[in-house]
Image 1 (tube, rainbow, N blue to C red):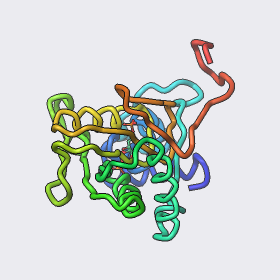
Image 2 (image 1 turned 60 degrees about the vertical axis):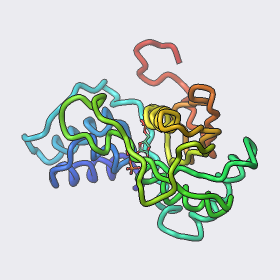
Image 3 (image 1 turned 180 degrees about the vertical axis):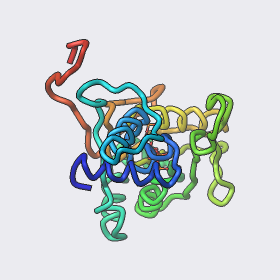
Length: 221
Ligand SMILES: O=P(O)(O)OC[C@H]1O[C@H](OP(=O)(O)OP(=O)(O)O)[C@H](O)[C@@H]1O
């Protein structure tokens, strides 16, 4: 995807296929607010009338779409990026023998990291993946039984992006609640500048730092 028009078209296609705002946000790696804004724009350009709308500021939501498909579509590139993420994580410990990938996009990256670090691999599915309706806070995430279990073990966490920080927070909490211990996390791109979650360092190969204040109503950037 090269520009916002491509994103708007994709959001419109996904909405037409019946995907929810949350699913569109997942698919396009943007926040839910941005997904709603994109779908609204797609509806305007096609004249569709069955589009849910949410208020958006005149300039649209402040978000950054991360398209890392050039890495994800080629195994060799994915492996190379896995080496870089592993190198970040090695700074925190040489004794960790479990890497937890956050479903879905974090898992292929975690697989590459686990291979590089010669560790076991586990996966965590965030609660939002099980959400259909009702209060998302009533749901819990889950660790797949097809992979290594986290109880009693130190581990690293790997994901692709941080947008709000919700998922990485949830993953750290879930690991601790399950009896594991998160030593550090690494992602490709951190849009939030998380730094750490409850004392667990969070590293990123790239940080997105917005410069200037656009239409920021608070004028505090
Ligand atoms: O910091 P947050 O606001 O929580 O957003 C970041 C999360 O959102 C994406 O997952 P998502 O479930 O949307 O997509 P995926 O299933 O393709 O990984 C991304 O892979 C992170 O896990």
